[in-house]
Each structure stands twice: as structure tokens, then as C-alpha cells.
Length: 63
Image (cartoon, rainbow, N blue to C red; front, side, top):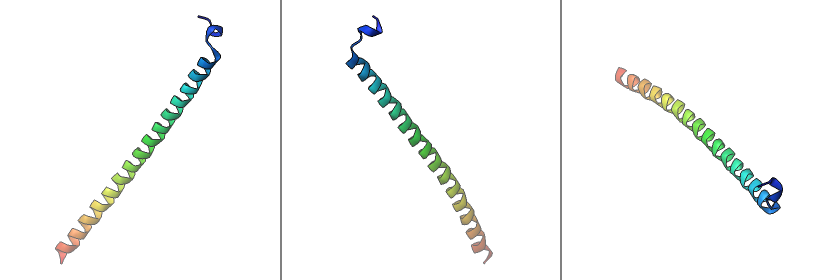
């Protein structure tokens, strides 16, 4: 089958579908990056909270 045998509408549909799939992949990738950044922020926040708890406990025990 030659490329000239494929109807123009089918070619356009295939091009549009590929573009849509690429946009979905980009969207998913951005979402994954956002989730990873949020997890990293959560990890740092958790570490800060643990430090604050241990500092507060030691101050309480020293009273």
C-alpha cells in the first residue's frame, strides 16, 4: 500500500490521534513531576516536624 492510497481523512485522523497521545503523555509526565515534588516537600516537612517534636520533648523532660 502506497502512502498515496491512504485517504487524506485517515491520515489527518492518525496525525490528530498521535498529537493527542503526545499531549496526554506530556500531561501525565507533568503530573508525575508535580507528585514527586510534593513528596519531596512532604519528606522535608516530616523531617522538620520530627526535629521539632524531639526538641520539644527534650525541653519538656528537662523541666
